[in-house]
Amino acid sequence: MLVELAFLAIRIQLIFTYLITGLHKLTGTSWLEGTAVGIVGSDPLFGPLWLVQLPVLSAVITWALLAFQFTFPIAVWFKRTKLPFMAFGAFFHLGTALWMGIPEMAFAFIACYAIWLDEGESDALMLRKLSRSV
Image (spheres, one colour):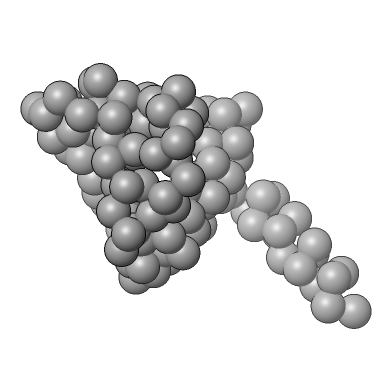
């Protein structure tokens, strides 16, 4: 019972993190205008600089990330949408680790994804990992 309560608390914390971050992004204009990713891409410290040359792609990525932040808290509760959203989130967070140089945050989020896996899903991932190492 206590373990289940702890897992629920971590799940709720992750959900609120995505929701609050998404709501904060709505207070500015660059996320709604679709320019946020392009702005980050234009910074030589964060890059990738090639995004500046593709404003439509930059806008689509910006809006996709914003949509992800608002839909992830709902999608992870359902078996059909949980794994695709977690995969998208893992790729996003790995991207921020590589391009923005913030691996601590990326790996913290990805580590929290594990608590959403049921026993069968985690067993399947472990079996794949074991079969690759043999």
